[in-house]
Length: 158
Image (cartoon, rainbow, N blue to C red; front, side):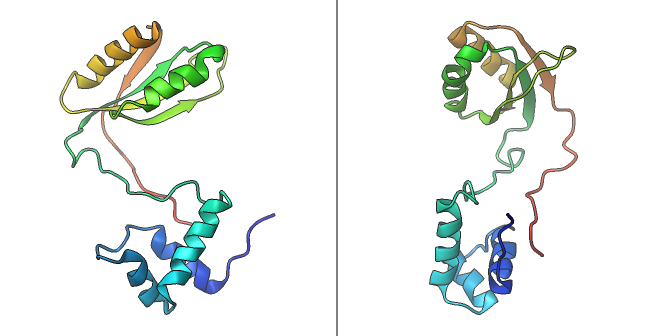
């Protein structure tokens, strides 16, 4: 069953879903804009996180502006019994922003995906080589990013 939000909650979530205000007290700034107390904003977001409706609340790094302009999606063939082990190893790498397990298909048997951000040409491939040695698996397909066409957060309320 879908959650029913009040109009005030929708306004808070619409603002919180965009870039946070660049102020010392961003939740107070949101509260002031909506016309509620800051604690209402904090309590709403904390409750949604506790109920696992919001998985996380954090900053989005624009990797190109931070000096990571050479990126690659790497599709791996990882045995199912090693998913957790390899996932922990991959997730610990600061160069990896996304790490997913996906369904395979007869024509595409890769099941594990990482998005690797490199600081310079060739850096993502160096990370791949290090990971291959660490996990003992070199069965992968490196899909270099050519151009980013869209990168936005979901908008749930306007």
